[in-house]
Image 1 (cartoon, helix red, strand yellow):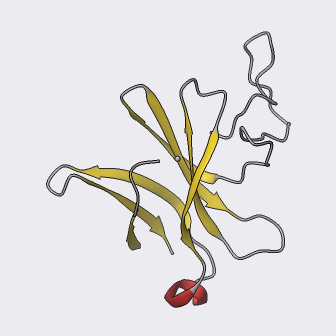
Image 2: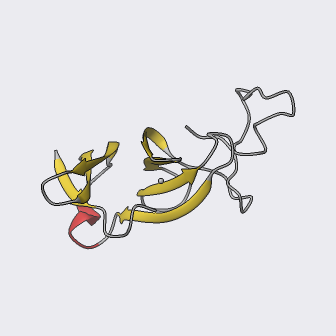
Length: 119
């Protein structure tokens, strides 16, 4: 398992307004989009709650590009905003075939968030 530190102020379920119907039900078998209308790619994700916001970190295996680990945020678990790509398959990570099951955890000793993922 490799560790990577999330370098940013904590800024990251697969749901958006396109999947959240007016009846308040999140429907399966739909393409979920973020607030900007982009398709969400956040496989094997992990959601954590920080005060009144939820952060979702997950593995992006979108077609035709190297893998990435993305971070989304939401206030209601229905509308998600893309925050940032935390890790990309480049540099020393270019040789890794995949980066699965990412988790974003808070380290109380350092007061920082740490990104853990399988490689």
